[in-house]
Length: 85
Image: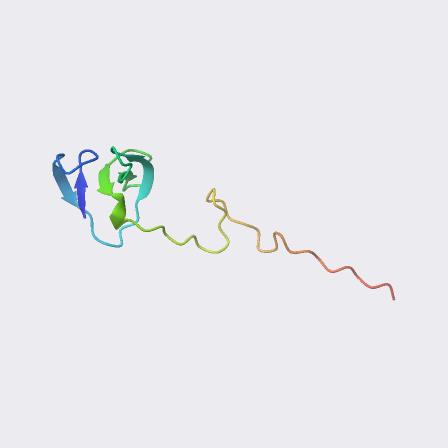
């Protein structure tokens, strides 16, 4: 994929991004919102634009909340009540 300097083919490409590279989409740009403004280094800085048609969502690892924080192993699991003997 060609990383471009802006949201369109008229912008120069300055780097090739290998298929399978994980990127963070910061926003969607362009007339049809089909260009992803991406961060390649996970530093919250814009590194360029990739056409959104080439991007697929990454699968979130189990045990990770959408905000990126780890879940406790027993979070959401109810403890069984102890039976009276």
